[in-house]
Image (cartoon, rainbow, N blue to C red; front, side, top):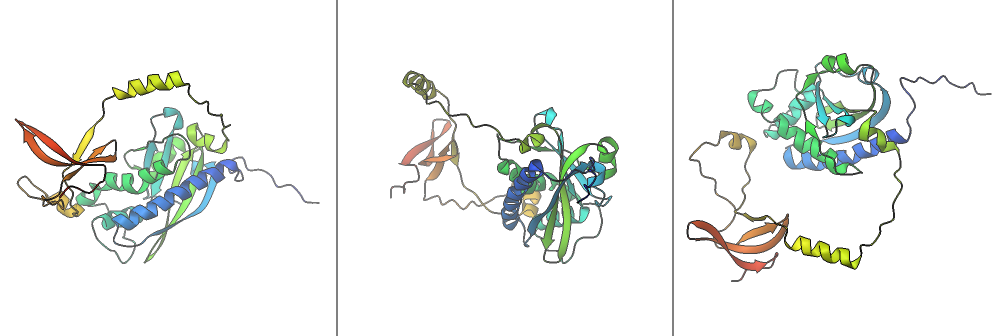
Length: 291
């Protein structure tokens, strides 16, 4: 007869919540990999190593003291804060990559340079916040990153709190490291483990649809004309000053693309009407311009 094992309530076994949390993280890691291949001059691979529930102190026992802990919050205070925990060597490697540098090993512990520090918000948005937001399985998710804190400061306030924690292995050509994403067992993070009953959709009535169409006809829309674009580097961008000239890829012999709600709507030639800038519609949608 098998003797039942005692249950450690500070470190319960994984269940539906841990599986759903892990699936969310795995989707975000795929988007991280795509973004990093576009932004960094070296390859990175990421793998979800584990997802556990426990006290924050227990889950972060293996985290180095110098790790940077970034709070990621939603607009709902009931959610609490996610904690993105990055060892300094991982953070410095990603910042160096954004500057076009290719290290041959994980950087030694040091403070970020002024130029590197200026890129932290961009790094968090492009490689972490956007992938997490776009991978969220429920209603739209909007995350905001706060100022980095030390692990000791975080544990001082949240040491005994129950949390979900994903350990993520990041592999570069020169070695492997681990970083973590922890979520409190509250708010929308807690609801990941509960299935939501589906509600059958009721088709709108003809009268309601007519009223809606009448209302939509008079809604204001924003029409944007894209002047052009140019690829540059973060270093050159940081060095721009008043009087510098950037040559765009857009040819003066081709009309400009015009967008409505993020969708290409017209092609148009720029000009003026009196003292105001104006455009002349050349073609609809993404049609070829007239010769």
